Amino acid sequence: MSPLRLVTIGLIALFVVLQYPLWFGNGGLLTVWELKREIAAQREENARLRERNEALAAEVVDLKQGLAAVEERARVELGMIKKGETFYQVIDEPKIDGSSQKNGRAGRVAPSK
Image 1 (cartoon, helix red, strand yellow):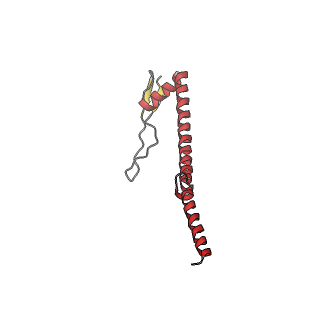
Image 2 (spheres, rainbow, N blue to C red):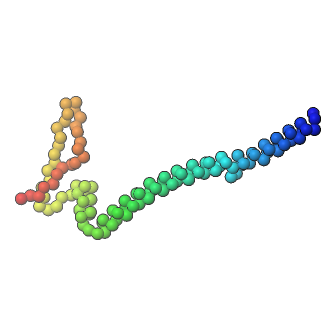
Image 3 (cartoon, rainbow, N blue to C red):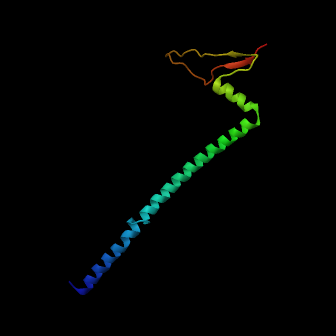
């Protein structure tokens, strides 16, 4: 082998040895790409949790400000009614195939006379 060929092979080997940590080592480009992906996923999660916290904070303010929110939650979640009201439950007729259609309401409340 000629000395020029040995120098070329040595430089190529040195180049490969120096490039390895850049691509695959700790803090290399592959690690950076993975970290960027994780950061993007964490930002999405943070945005989702921020929206949830804002909704919960608004609910706390509603509960602290008046009884209207408490009354609404008692009606919707616990099915409670006020004194003097009459509860009417409307049941849909089943379809021909036997399945019933749900409209999401358990019944209606009307003041009694």
